Image 1: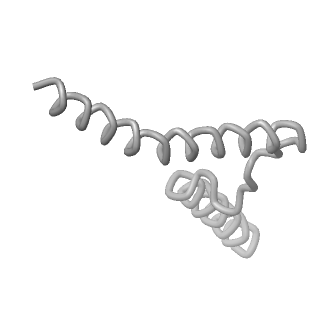
Image 2: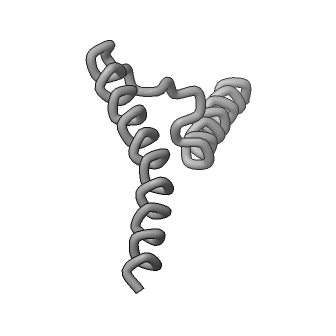
Image 3: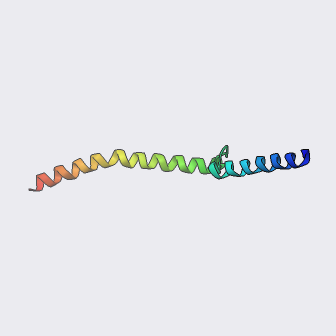
Amino acid sequence: MNRKQALIKKMAKRTKARENKKEHPNHGAKDRYISKADRAKLEAAELETAELKTAEPGAAQQSASEHTAAE
């Protein structure tokens, strides 16, 4: 009887572990490593987009003032 009970407990434990994996597939997983060169590229791209965003409103105002002056 004890052997049968032990097997049932082991199977229940394994089943529970399998179910937990289904619920949380990446629980505790680490992020992918990003090399130093890749981080530098990403930072440069972010700076470039930030510069473009700050330059766009001024360009839009200039084009709008040119458009009103032409009329």
